[in-house]
Amino acid sequence: MDLSLTDDQQAFRDTARGWVEKTVVPNAAEWDRTEVMDRDIVRQLGEMGFLGATLPEELGGTPCDYISYVLLMEELGRGDNSVRGIVSVSLGLVTKSIVSHGTDEQKQQWVPRLASGEILGCFGLTEPGNGSDPGGLTTKAVRDGDDWLLSGQKLFITNGNWAGLALIFARTGGPGPRGITAFLVDPSTPGFSARPVHGKLGLRAQDTAELFLDDVRVPDRQRLGDEGKGFGIAMAALAKGRMSVAASAVGTAQAALDASLRFALERNQFGKPIASYQLVQEMLSDMSVDTDAARLMVWRAADLCERGEPFEIAASKAKYYASEVAVRVANNAIQVHGGYGFIDEYPVGKYLRDARVLTLYEGTSQIQKLIIGRDLTGINAFN
Image 1: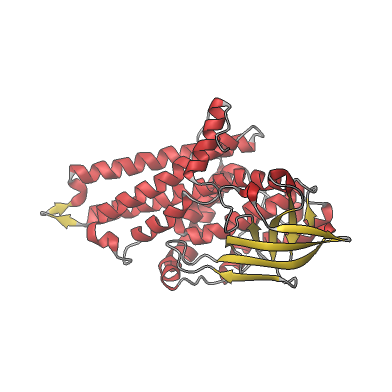
Image 2: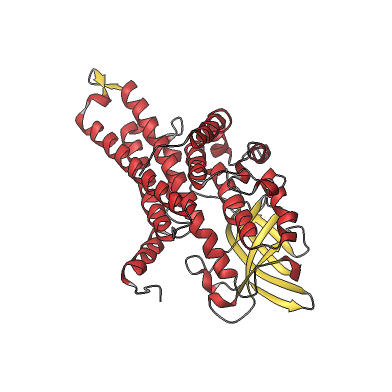
């Protein structure tokens, strides 16, 4: 077992870290306050090759392994999870699904444009009445000759207003997961509309949307995968997506720890730095151990994925643990900062707000526990 990074992995992380420090960190607080991110960030993500990480070079991708991929997600999460979400969804959930399940025509049509940042993808699975139970989704796709007519509503869709391609999951058959099919939908198609979701606790600068589909006509050639196989496509995407969320949680925890260390060494009370007090050191130590443990869980999942071995349970464990760690570490960071942690002059409040959603999307912590429990016992507690 070798836990050291290769030269290529180290170089990739250094590149990502340098870009985040130069481009993301100086703007993160202002984007958060105004709830507006500079959309030129998409072009830059494409130029850096981040929107094509792990994709085949012949499709415009940036060849790298999954350890490098989670290192990228950690660095983006350390800088601003609103930026990380752009990459996680467009690349991790949409583009990789096309590479894995698309026809040659679909790959050539969409993947190079997504990898370059010419367009973004959004992942249309969650609905107002179906979050943790995606198998119960109600958006419908009805055959009309060689086309499908899609009607329904999606909610909490990252990149939904910015996207040039929507991966929409709709019901083409009976109830349950087996009746779901995936479609590649151009958002400019008549009947497709998006509305921003405002008032979020965290990820304020990230584009989050509600999607509406009113008899959106989609040619059958834009169906992704076989009819009735959409649920499997979605679950495969989310399994890898959980590694991304877990890695970004590690980045958030690391950022909160780094900020707390700086503050504890500079802040004086009772005539000496607060870092010299035992209870402050206890908090810092807990934060450091939690962050390191979460990082190792993420690396284990990524290593299994890279070697082609079953990784789904490891990814669920990493996502569950790392997301909870991010909340715990960010909360301790506010405690270390005292009253200063409660104002946005310091970044730790934003870390806590952003970290909180990591325990919710791509499967809540409770859903991850049920996945892990099912693996341990062989008993399905979902129904």
